[in-house]
Length: 49
Image (tube, rainbow, N blue to C red; front, top):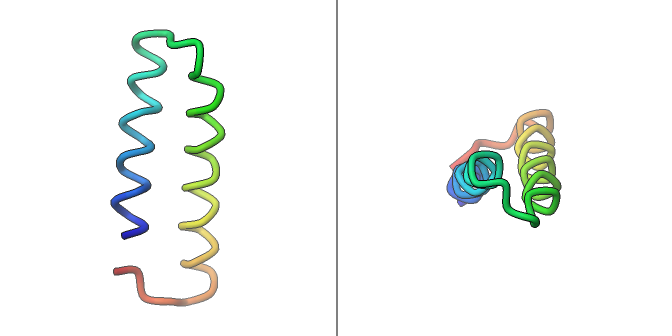
């Protein structure tokens, strides 16, 4: 589930960069949150499903 969210956010972030949406700053924030949540789960040693 977490990986799916991370991939979706990555795609939205790339779309924001390519098309220069005014909300690309918001998409960058969401991408950073997704990356941080993945790193926290990896650091905690939980199995990513």
